Amino acid sequence: MRRNFDADAAYVDAHASRGLALDIGAGHGHFLARLKSRGWRVRGLDLSPDAAAAAKRLYGIDVETRMFGPGAVPEGAFEAVTAWYVLEHVKDPAGFLAEAARALKPGGLLGVRVPNMVFSNVFLWARAVPGLSRLLWTLGVDTDGKSSHFNLLDPPAHLYGYTPATLEGLLRKAGLEPLVTMPAKPVDVGSAGTRIAKDLAFGVTGLFYRLSGGAWNPAPAITAFARKPLKA
Picture 1 (cartoon, rainbow, N blue to C red):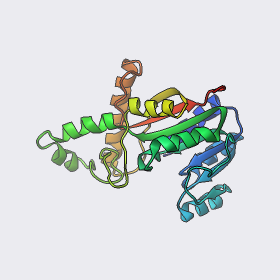
Picture 2: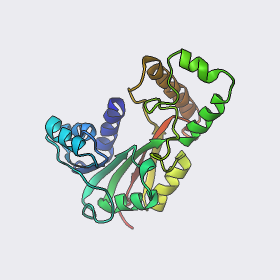
Picture 3: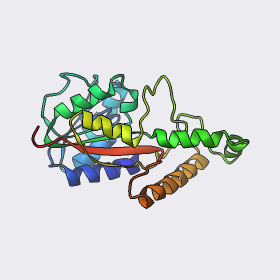
């Protein structure tokens, strides 16, 4: 996640008042460590005790091992709330975003990242081309594994899928103002062939995004930022 986390931390620091940040699904604390190095106070939530222990050991960051939901954090306590690759796993995404909005101070920033069903639909169409899956496998490109970044339909782990339009609609429903929905950078996992293919997919889909002026975003994953209005 390093490329995403570097970009995420830079965006949050540039577009939110430096203060207290909450990362939901904080894992080993790698993203919060980047904000901490920029002068932010940080707090994390994660369901894994092992991940929470790693965040403490690696960065001295306290990550609480409990679920995010109603009453989990104080209302209006955070300048920034983030949830990277979380929303596709939750049973009530609208309720999740409403609670995240409640946790933000007026003017606060929310950041989320999810797989993009626009890309998934294109990829599923491409996989129907005779012989393409076998060719990709021969080239060392994994199109099915957990690290592939191509097989985005992952039930029962992924409960919902999002396009840029549906994600922005949910953010507005939660009372937030979408700022940007942009291609997410590739995740550096998988075989050498898979990583090369992911970089290529990011480059090609990013070109479509730029040429369309942001109107069409077919990237494998999308990162969205939204702001809580200063006045209700």
